[in-house]
Image 1 (cartoon, helix red, strand yellow):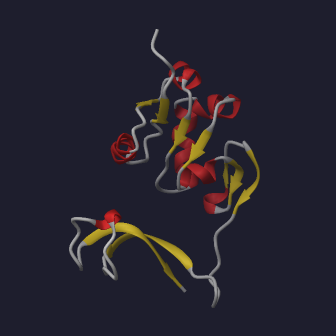
Image 2 (image 1 turned 180 degrees about the horizontal axis):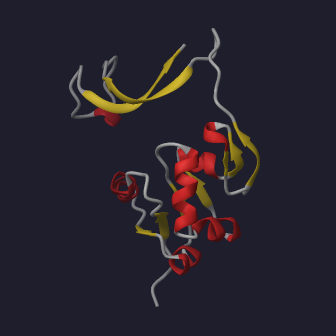
Length: 149
């Protein structure tokens, strides 16, 4: 029997290939699965997500993963929308979520000293070289976060 490994939850709304590639670069193996038994046997579970909380929860309910994820005892990492889904509810679409973390995920409000993060396609402005952006040209179109007030 092989050793348990990290499982990326196939929740239907995330770029799991990019996540697996990132884990590979870190030397961590993973598989993508929506199978409850595989997820329960994992050493670590990663719940990625893209889109709206209500839609994501609908997909988790359809695959019955909404019943599995709250029962896990191994480390669980929520990424982006996946983190929102770990809360009891989300302000986004008035969604009831997994209830693993007490509280409600709320929309960020901008302030003078608190810009709201923006996720999406942006033009890269290289200010100094870094191994993180090796191979990217200035003005390259990249999917990343930035802050806007």
